[in-house]
Image (cartoon, rainbow, N blue to C red; front, top):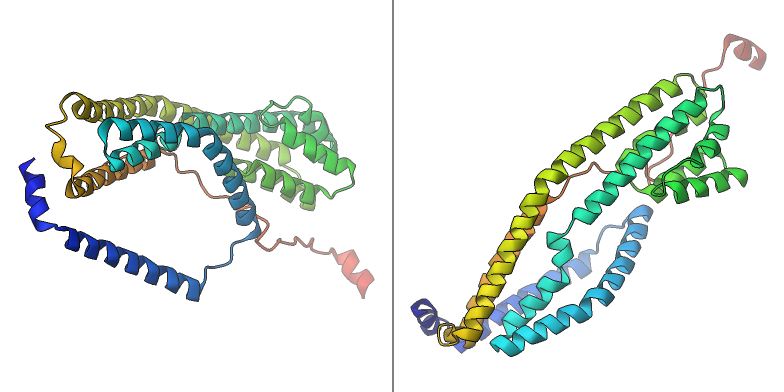
Length: 313
């Protein structure tokens, strides 16, 4: 605690006000530069994704906001530290984002597994000398629940006389997964070129999807123990600080001063950086989508035969 007292002699209130004013002025200048230069325009699919994220954030705030406010108020009443109350509220609000992730990984894994099963079903249906337009509705009936709504929408578009490449592009946008883009791109190419070998391509893609599912399962099993250890460390640290502030307030009394609150904010910032870094290490880097609508569509032109050349002359 002597270190905090020493910091109190260095950082007086005028110095703290000067630092805060510098931060505010610097932020204002940065915002002014951004306002003058503007931001680059976002593609249409990124705008739709941003609106979905905003709606998801609103739903998340409605569920977590009240709980975070309650926990922050309790910590503030127990410790009398505004920084601790604010940090506790933020920690509760972003707990799933920082230390969750298992639900998102399981959802992505189920989606890839459903894609593999549907690809295998489509391959087996095409093997019976059935065209792609007839094979898609037949394979959609046996699809898993994770993929069934998207395939039903695809079948409805085909019944409404939507061209098959356009309907498949809508399917790729709805699933919004890089693994699905690879499979749907093969279907779009076959729908445009009508070439042979689709069955072999779908078999190879289904095998690749199965291998991706196995890899994600192994990675998820290894990271589950690490994620649990991080949660235990965070819980013990928070409980230790609260225990000291409740049962031994004299020991942490210097943190009640303005300089102590500043030091506590720095400590909380270091913890937040560490939690964010752990989250980055525990996340799976998936490839970006390439079958997007903002890219110009590629037109495939079939070369004309010699008879067509003679007829055109």
